[in-house]
Image (cartoon, rainbow, N blue to C red; front, side, top):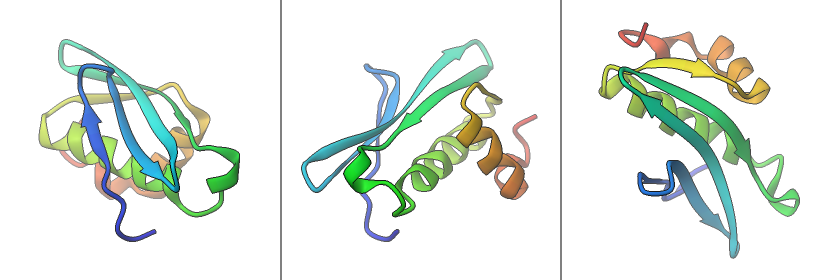
Amino acid sequence: MADLNIDNNALASRFEVMVNGSLAELDYRIEGAMIFLLYVEVPASEQGRGIASELSRAALEFSRDNGLKVVARCPFISAYMRRHPELLQAVS
């Protein structure tokens, strides 16, 4: 999925993007040097377009860039991490 403008809304503790007027989001919680990726939610009308994957990528890149250890609480994000271990370098 190209051209998504994903924002890190730190006040709401989520990565978010508006797609066709609907909000897709990945909620997280930071505690010390750890980031807990809680869940990713994409409106039903927008599912299957790679939006959840792009939100997951943004969260993992943020975690890597900030030296945060990732704890995935969401099955989708856990599966994404297994498929893309290159995004976890220097995080653990």
